[in-house]
Image 1 (cartoon, rainbow, N blue to C red):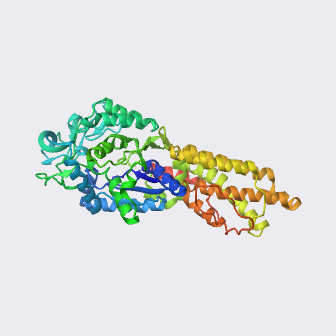
Image 2 (cartoon, rainbow, N blue to C red):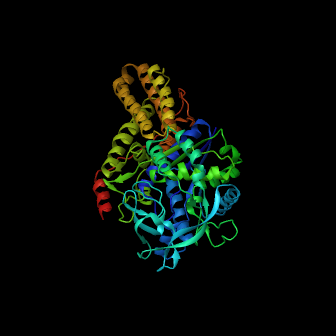
Image 3 (cartoon, rainbow, N blue to C red):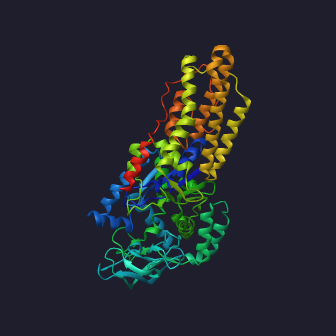
Length: 539
């Protein structure tokens, strides 16, 4: 089966923080799982290099937007690699391939009935002598009164236009912008109301935040949106008389899922139409602030294009991750930066904490105390302990061989059930529950090890001891497969030690097989780190 997994495209205007990771990690879990099942996976994403955030950063750093976006794009790639993200194509919206794909997509869309020209009011700053991109206009949301930008309110999720903001200001010079006329191309989203309403209503399995926000967006009234803008930085508009304008960022960055999967298909000899066809399955993984762009905007563009591209299937939309009880704020430097945490901690420890404490259905909190405790208690105390005590025992008592034992039927059934349960939970986007089930089983096998007392039976009942260790090794092999989507680095070590293939099906290890030289999977974290990290954060 063709599986497309689209991870949200982070803005290439600053470093990633743990909140970004919490929203994006489920994409890699899905990709690894579906590959284990034998599906044809296209796991794609990239850096969002156009738009206002990049332009603002470029001004601050006295660089060009290209230089700034390239710098952060390269940083993102390093961070994702260190965390084990297995993107099949991680691109950037400033690439030649993306630009070429978007222009062709738009050319076809312009020939259809959903694009029209209209003169519109647009924010203009007399002090800066320029039309202002929506994100350059800041003020208060007309709906919830929170601070908002001209494109979206992050507090209530409303998609906005600059002219509706209350007490609007230019974010560059803080002066009050005026409204001027400018002619643009518009996408007639209002014409798509029936299709969009039917599409959203047919996906009752989406997370609650995706369902509620999408329905509210439609209920409050769809609006046609400009797909061109008066900008210097972006993709040229492939339309006569629009040579001095650019494609509006919202009408091109979500098309990165298509352009990246197109590149991947070309490189791997895959059938691009099949990836986007009726027999495929698509997941979109992002934070809740991006919901309307994936449930309303992307479907609108796909329908308007007319090529029968597949609309989104699963919307994996996370709530927010707070930090030590406070909202993450990059402007106040209240954040844990990914480029720093990946240098100091085991990538599986980071992945485990952000999945086991993921903001799937409600906001959750990152605390250094809980991070250290989860590493020491769950990864080291449960999983690492089971692997280490079992394999070290086999090395010492059975000459580093897997003893010839009899499978415990109850344990075998539990493992088989886990494959089904965990697989279903992953496909439903319930990653936290999935990893909890695996660790609950790991704890039960640690209890089994204690109750069977192999350190005693090795002396007075060797056959019983062989059965115990054989069953524990068999469990470890299967647990390594089950945990691979979540904890790929430790899983790879275990599978190598036991010479097991990484496919999503029950494994039975062979008696007398050699065990590789096992090493420690997880190091204990000193509790002094909690205070050290908190002091660093509070600075």
